[in-house]
Image 1 (cartoon, rainbow, N blue to C red):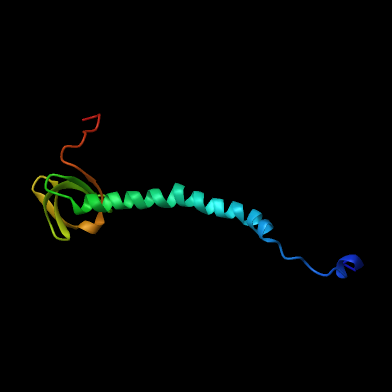
Image 2: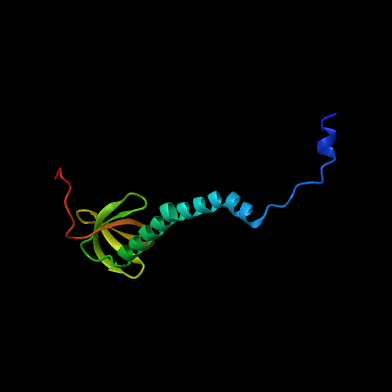
Length: 112
């Protein structure tokens, strides 16, 4: 016999009251709230800033594409941006593939 006779004769589990249910689910709720404020909200803020920077890209800005191409913006119109990646070498890049934008007056690296 796997079950004792006393356990087999019990009337069943009692449904938890409202307070017990709240105590049991409070850690899960707190975990979801902490996850939102520590992970989701900052990521949404970064994405919004990147979209604003991409929409405001102008001539002279230095951009990096998702493919790793780094260059200076020569012309920006509509959904395309013309980027100079080497002297007299220009490529057209779709704005949606831009991963980062550095303004024209940005700081220079320490080793330059």
